[in-house]
Length: 398
Picture: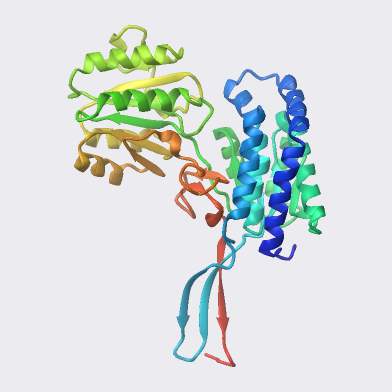
């Protein structure tokens, strides 16, 4: 077991990593091009997540720099109690120990997620996808350089170059102690990890996010939020996949036609229920299963509901528990929606695209959890800790 590094040393490693990422910027991008050229799949969202350009490198640098500026999440007092017998009791945050991150196609995770886990005092095991191997190995080499230059063991960041069979074997019988597993990727990856893991798993679940357009919606806001949520980044788990429009929306026909034309400008495939599919350029929703689907594509499903209550029920049945949006000028209706929709993030007149650790003030995130234990939504630095009881006595017995 690695002895907890001082906060000064952890920060120094993160800042050195920022310097190295800048120095090696062009090499990282060149190596990433080899991964992109070797990618044989036809999943556009996978390709989008695999790509590293100058903007991505800037984000990596910003992520580790910001992490270095944040307070130490370890050893924070959460509770204290003076026992009648004189014992002093504290509850403080503690690192998990070893965190395994399993992810697909995103070299930026090798920086951001590893950085969050490292800053919170954990050893990190990284299991990336084969499609990003060259990029990941380059970034891990930089982690090792940053650790060595600060006289810290390279064991703190370890890359597991495993195939699927080796990964399954490791999940079922780890060859070293693993305290927490965080899978970041599609539903298949998450199901695979859940099935085989023998230690706690934080589920970074599917999106399939909904926008409900209430009768008292500002319709221009509704159009902007839907188009932004659908088209800004189709590979994101905070993208919009479903729109439900209240049957009592004023000038409903004009609104729907305007929405269709704005989405079509981005070549979005539009599916509709029996009411919406009567409009031009809308295909019929083949089965109710479509409402469960996360598209990760230029594709959207639109339907009609009769009330806020029906919208809430529909979201709670079909969504991934990630993010949901109500567009309305009625505060009471927004409150009803926000309190009763069972998603990690709920929005009133704002885009679901903000469900992101950086955007919600956490600096960055390890994952966006759709679990309710032990943290829901973006998991930032402060959340990647467990806790420990510290009890000080002078011979008390019970």
